[in-house]
Length: 196
Image (cartoon, rainbow, N blue to C red; front, side, top):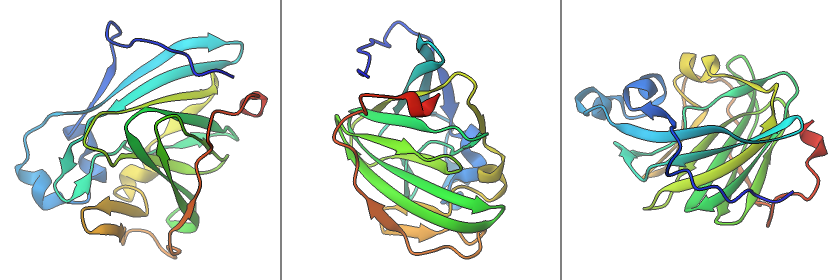
């Protein structure tokens, strides 16, 4: 499948602000004195192909105190997978499989412009902007795929934070394994039937 070439300049996004991220920011001391500002923009449902839909997210290159800017984090309700392709910038995708607050598996994938990743079924995930420019990503998912943010809100983010000093474990989780790294895909899979 090709990555659609869509100009989002004239589209109206949903905006995630710093205040929306209160529950998941690592550096709460910084947060308490920070001004509210836009952190990322979600351009949903830009293309539909059968049962699949395509969206674009733009994450600004800000620091959240000690932490790199990121998305709030969510898990999919049901057994849905999702693909992401980096359109501009550089990303780290953090993926975690949990049973409530117990972490069964966690890994990260660094992806550069043109590279893709697949979010496995049952994994919550966070997108982190590690570059000094906007991170623009495109994702394909099933139109019936719904997101649940509640675990990330309750446990104050993912089981790791990515900071200027490196990775920091989130103490609200139990049994957090050492973080491993996997390679990004060089391109989007030709066949996205696995998303259906």
